[in-house]
Length: 255
Image (cartoon, rainbow, N blue to C red; front, side):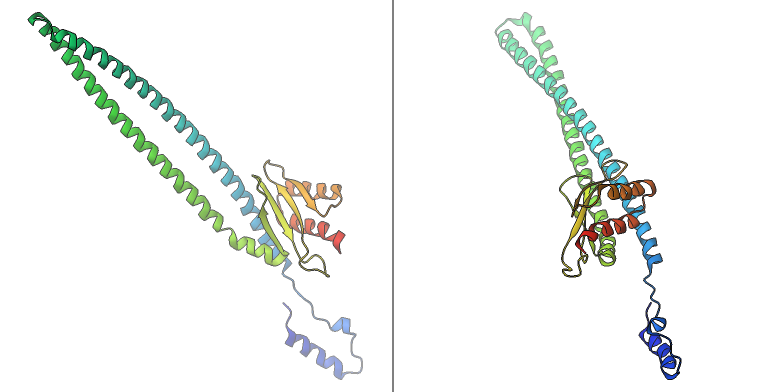
């Protein structure tokens, strides 16, 4: 790092001697910390790729599990509803039979007793079905709660990335924005025009597939140079140098 006191002390002997070195020789060396920046950029790239892959896998797995479970529950509920309808129809038929047989003589009492037993058995079956429906509803509520906890965990993980985004914005004058499209991010750079520090250049990176691609750029630059940058990114997955090269390409037309 640059130390003003050290620079002043270094200049004093030269001013007192007759053969003082030139001003260029007396300038202090400045360490911009590129090695540390490169390491941090590499770590961020690794975490960035891991986070995207893990998040995509978790979302797909959760979605598939939810669809399978929902289909099973719907099919089960449909079967239970059909059984209930059949039982209701049978109960109605038996009730009509009981009404007719109530007017019969004593020889029909045996038949009435048999029908009564059947009615009791179906009532027990009906109660068992109601109990199963209540159990299924409880399972659905538990699965909905699990999905809500999962969504909350994803939100908390996303908040952990805020310090990393602050780092990139500070050192590269950059911010990352959403585009409204899944698996696509917009990288916006400022401080590229010495006459207007607020002027912005940007590009959109599509991460839907294994090989990334640049979907759009502003301002327009040579397509072959962009292809070379993206090809190097897909080969080494080193996001830091890629962002620096893209900043240089986009800022060149406005300088």
